Image 1: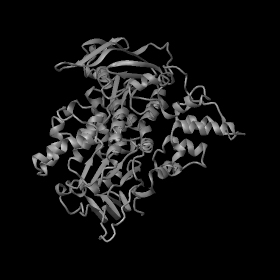
Image 2 (image 1 turned 180 degrees about the vertical axis):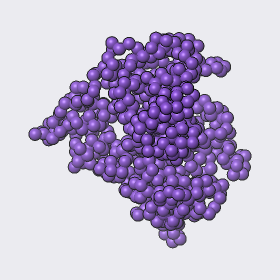
Image 3 (image 1 turned 180 degrees about the horizontal axis):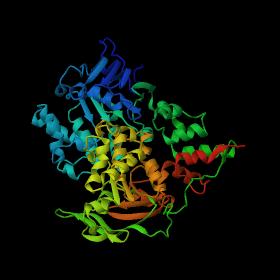
Image 4 (image 1 turned 120 degrees about the horizontal axis):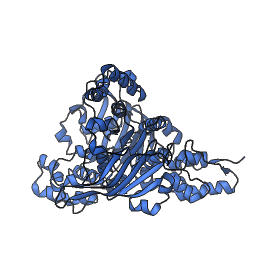
Length: 599
């Protein structure tokens, strides 16, 4: 495989001996975990100082395994069989202890909560280098430098628990930089962040991209933002452990058909360009912005190459009540809800929130981290008791329900399914709640089989939950909730850590359940996904509901969304720019359906 091209010269100094700037060398590498088929096959590449490699691939493509191989997590934590040769900073991670490799390699995982251990930022940043025996003076000299690199100047005394998701991820990144690594490995560093946190971390990465001598390898599903920010000197696409594409980032991300085939989401701009202006596809200027795309479409319309077609979205009624209609009596009512977490002073999380959800709706709940979404949901399921206001289910205050009674009416699927799973098999997982409710054995067995079949897990009922893929564990958590028979299903961030196809699995399931009579409330930061499924959006900011209405109406409130650090999906903004569709498109598929060749 060709070596990554560099943006700066590395030619030899006349009369001097050649300098080996290789940081990573991977030669015909394959790897298999114990008792599993190969996860990686035939990898062959090199990275030099200053390279920034962005790795794309569907879940299961081998991205995380590659990170583990280069960082020493394999074989020192996860065992398996390796073929070929791996060299990182001149060391073989297979044969040197991790503490020795840690002075050369920094790694940041997708969940910052799993990496932060100290009570404040200063101690967190000092923890790693102190364990490596660096002098105290050197450690404290590095702290402001590391914080400046990630845009957190002056955060030394901040408590880590009080940081936002984006700030926590940047602290984890700064902690890795504290070790002055030659190689920085980032495994899905923005997958659990809201749009603001995502922008913060990617901007921090752009800030350190040109850092002298630092080599970066980052895995991500986030194609459009990578392209927009110009991150990376090269891209690698993995497909079932093998190299599917390699080259400059913009050229790789222009290969729309290949990306679709291997389960990587093409950047929306590139996908539309490939259909509308294939002769320009692949050029960096071709997908520069929504304005450029709109100009190209106008040119095609004026030249008679394109024509506008009506956008039809089956099942849309244009309102906020989905199939139920506004006349349906309220299923859930939130009336004047306020809640403050204890402290000095108390932290006000909800401020006089009013919300009504009707049977049959699919409602999207959106807003930045800290806007009050999670606190509101905890009040809805009875985990938190508000200091003011009430939550009523079918007219009855939920405070009058016992926990078991409420669980048969409102079901919650958490962002991380691993927080909900603990039994020895998928079947036992679903049966657990039913047994606690006193459901007769025959009825419990019937409901368990039905719930597992509904989510497509009927064939793995005897499998230990943690042997299932992350996506299947999510579906098992849904099955456990579904078996309880709730009328309202709340999904918290169903797209976290999911690839192009996986991000739609739970949403498609939720839509099927809505069509069958359930009511859905989905919390998400994924504007493209929520635009596809939700008929109504509720936007929160600083503990208050600031927008509530039909999806298109909410997306049209650009100034209010900007104040919440959100923005409408690309397809909707393109529709606004062009002004040729009514109603405006919500998804890339809408745009493609709304344009066709003339004649």
